[in-house]
Amino acid sequence: MLEKLNITIVGLGLVGGSFAKALKALNPQNIWAIDIDKESLQKGEEMGIIDRGYEEPEEPLKSSDLVIICLYPELVKRFVYENIENFKPGAIITDVTGIKNGLVEEINKILPQSIDFVFGHPMAGREKKGLEYSSSEVFQGANYIITPNSRNQKSSIDLIEDIARNIGFKRVIKIDPQKHDEVIAFTSQLPHIIAVALVNSDDLNVDTGSVVGDSYRELTRIAQINEKLWSELFIGNKENLLQKIEVFQEKLDLLKKAILEEEKEVLEEEFKKSSIRRKNL
Amino acid sequence: MLEKLNITIVGLGLVGGSFAKALKALNPQNIWAIDIDKESLQKGEEMGIIDRGYEEPEEPLKSSDLVIICLYPELVKRFVYENIENFKPGAIITDVTGIKNGLVEEINKILPQSIDFVFGHPMAGREKKGLEYSSSEVFQGANYIITPNSRNQKSSIDLIEDIARNIGFKRVIKIDPQKHDEVIAFTSQLPHIIAVALVNSDDLNVDTGSVVGDSYRELTRIAQINEKLWSELFIGNKENLLQKIEVFQEKLDLLKKAILEEEKEVLEEEFKKSSIRRKNL
Image (tube, rainbow over all chains, first blue to last red; front, side):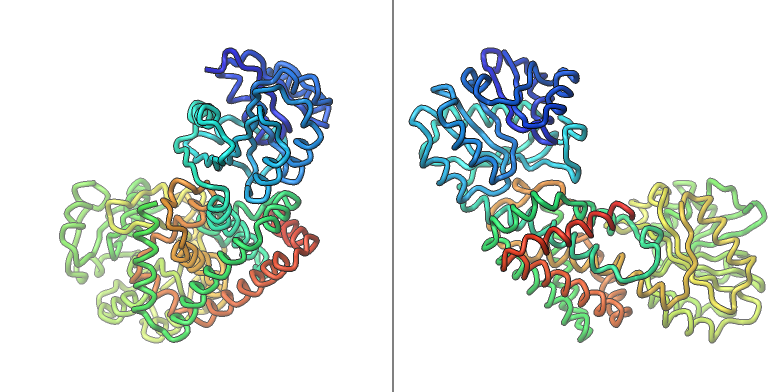
């Protein structure tokens, strides 16, 4: 499938490195990486997950059929703007950014006719950052969201979907960028906010680690959070996120009131509802 | 250690069954179970995790050196009241109840001098209930809280601690019943409330399962919840729990306000704090 393609990964960190590892196993013609960090590039070459690393984008981009941009949201825009002349005519670009709405419009405005940007969001990550934590296993069984737009050719969307499935993603869903951002506010951003608020509300004055069960550990894993990336993602999607926080707050208040007033039936109803929903997830 | 002891498990469900399995491996003289459900007792005998099951408590209790009561909180009290004449003089009793404060006082009031009740709380469970989900593996590496009180003999506390370590618990911590209930409100009850509120605030109108990552799955596992048991636990510990919910709500409001007003520095500070705390857990 990829035998005739030159692929460039932009940003060889946790996600970019994981893509490189997973794609290398599919034997593309060449797999290159662009990064401002020389060490990561050298390490990627040593690990054998890229054929060559570049600090300057021009050379690899001019020959790349597929470009996978694994940068923070703000940097994706800047990278495309600065390299608009460097992409190979007919190239397909994709990204891994966690919010889509403004990004899709802004980038589509400046793309040349012959370049097709298929926006995507692999729902796989880790609480760590950097190439050393990258692993093709993070993709296994995970979900991949593609947000097609009217500029996209079906063949380009199909390619990204095929790649996603071939590197281990289980489900590929296509939704529009607006819906994506709403969905992500609930399924990813709100859980991170909750985990942080939970950990930061610890006022026990004991060694918390010795009095927790699995539930606290699980709920708080993602409270170890890349503060720059997520601040940007939250503020970039603030309308959706604030709406989701508010719905959550209403549900929490409902439970709180039922506990205060000892309304056992209300609690049991809510618990039955959540049990069924979670079971069907 | 247990070779000369007759042990009775009261309530052969998920936790009682897990205790039976784990204790059987330590070769006690006898291990019996009491349950109102005949089928569970038969199944326990067939599985070889108990030597014999009893629907009526008198016979096994009269010969038991150690009684492990694995019942819901309200039923623990009732069981002790109803069997106060049946316990063997010198017997040690323990429980697995998730809240302690009222329970310890009420039970201590009626105990004969020669009976020592060491209250305990293994921090291990599953979102399922029933003997068929029991497993000694749920205890491996988990925390065990003992809440000693002034009636307890050191030798009795030591026995429960030894057993806890021998069946796989990693850390055994001793705190008083009041502190236990505060700690549990935060580390166990609040996470359950949060998970339920999160799942029940899903208003996406999509197949949520196809758009979630690991974080949502992890945060919501415990939203599959035994509604009767947990309603009782929450209401029985409502002062502590309401206080913990409120501290959490304050932290959540702080993050919400920072997102609304795009205060990146505030967000980054909170994320750094949660990252350090979670790393040190």
